Amino acid sequence: MQRYFVLQENVTRNSIRITGDDVHHLQRVMRSQVGENIICNSENGQAALCRITMLTDDYVDVEVIEWLKDTNELPVHVTIAQGIPKGDKFDLILQKGTELGATAFIPFQAERSIAIWNDEKKYHKKVKRFQKILKEASEQSHRNRIPTLYPVMNLKQLLDEAPAHTVKLFAYEEEAKTEKMTSKLVNSLQNISSHDKIILCIGPEGGFSNEEADQLIENDFIPIRLGKRILRTETAALYALSSISYQLEELRCLT
Picture (cartoon, rainbow, N blue to C red):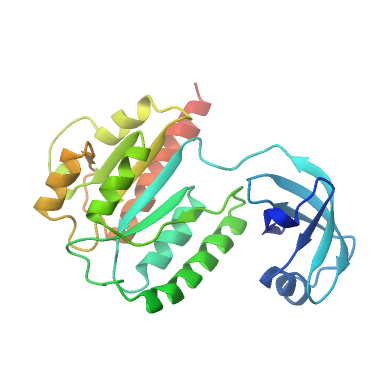
């Protein structure tokens, strides 16, 4: 069933008004008709089964049939701090990271970032595209919330943001080269509760510099490996999110 995210100001207990680009999608793409059912998500994470009652060129009105109790969010908050990659790799990270349950994304200007996002005018255009990717990926994967996209940060700003999280990790290729029998990632997740907030830092192409790794460790970030192989920057966050989902959702269903 088609799902749409709506502004909180357009939501009441019994009815919802859909505006913006979704009106065109409902009318021109989906060819929706009065009486059809859809799901609407409010900005506070609540989802409702709804029936279309009116279609106009400016808005679509629906009546709430039932407020749904199910949630499709990860049991913990996971923020991906991604060293800015080149090309359109960040698009892929946002799309697939959203599908895999990330709560937020922080793009940061790392020492080895090839791309430089310091032009506010150009970045503003990127943000519009990024927000569209986040919304569409959230709808496709039946998320209850759209992930938050933070402004671009440097490493110092990222470290200032980190204390808001209870578990701080960074993917470090030197860890993948060791012969350790235990995984710091698994060890970090074993005692995680729903009150915890994870921040995971991923380096750009070329990884973290020694200085950056030292600063992260000094600020209580735990260096982790993501398997024994060296992953591309656009693969690393997806591996980690899949591991977190498996550890906290699938394995715990068995216990």
